[in-house]
Image 1 (cartoon, helix red, strand yellow):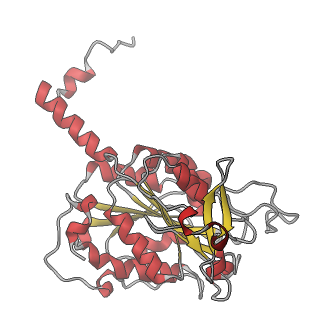
Image 2 (image 1 turned 180 degrees about the horizontal axis):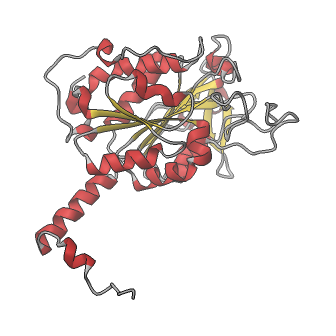
Length: 351
């Protein structure tokens, strides 16, 4: 794939060196629990990075706090292990001030949706040119197994011995509600699908949220098993493809239609005919269909879980708008005078 396939990176200097996956591996010992889904995500990201065609020093990974947030240590790029929940805010500063960087955020369901929830939604609504990878294992792993904002209601954990009373967040629904211009969901163990979603996110100019269902085999093993088990995955997983009918099932016998009341229904394709099945439109300006698709999954059985790109629409990114505004003001008014601003009319003397 050529670098022209990534318009979001048009301002980032390209490399004239043919980089490989090994070039993005550091000398640090990877320290996650054996069998953790983070290993698979790390391998996929390192394998995908050469496709960007960028110099390593123009790529930055910013993380918050949590198991996933060790990611910058293992990427041979610039990186910042920041503070709990604040990775999107810190990455926003980098993105808007350094258009020569490709900025990636790595976070978890606890880091991003609990203490970091406010920073996440504002980065998305502003459409800052960030790629946000949200590892969702439905548990707090680093702090040893407390329930998280995505844990299903009734979840028994160390902090909820009688079952969680909380209604859980749906990260895709949340992102769509925040008017994110790119929203996708994928699985840690599906290397091909994960890589295709990463490429789509990298090509997008603006905020891209990729929720990655990731297994914590120590504190929440098997959380996504119905979507991973070869015996059940085809029947539970709905793979979204832009422009294609939304059909799934081991026999390709189930589909999605719009019901009379406006909601989405799962029906037998044979009973309605393929022409009646909805076609996925990730580029629809209105996020209504994407939002409805994100709500189809059963939170306990995971039946009817949609994966893939839910939304991918074009809107000027925050950093592009900011640069344009500064250029426009400078052209009309000339270079700014900081002292004149500080000593302007809106000042007072304290005696």
